[in-house]
Image (tube, rainbow, N blue to C red; front, side, top):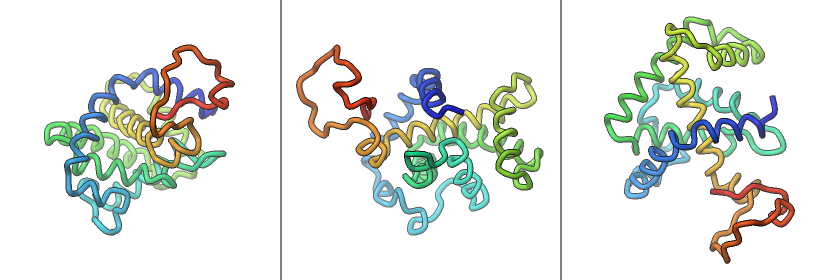
Length: 191
């Protein structure tokens, strides 16, 4: 798979769906005392996922965004950010909706012996779910897409990726609406 194409298409398809809850969650988390412990689940403990679910999340985010010339999702703490945001920043109604979709996804993984599969088998199972259109796996697919959207959003907004792999200006300069990609050093802009 071409990682750049995947990121591009998912960003287009999910931008609006992720933007509002993400922005709201980030604003709420800035006011939260628990936000200080984000990025270190070992110290703060799990606030949303059960340990086995969290281990699956950790593995999933690296399947979605593995290490290439850029760090993997777990290397920049995406799994911990998902745990923190859902457990501490989501409103109760959003947390409940997320839990229902994640439960359907987690059940789907169990029913399809996800834990017994090798890396290729796991990827095939997720690809099949991603492309499914039947009503039986609709809830599981929705839970998977939620996780995938969060993974990409939190990855792209992580400090390491934003400052080392995307163009980043800590203080914006003059607005230039039409510049060539070469003028940016061949990199997209960080959010």
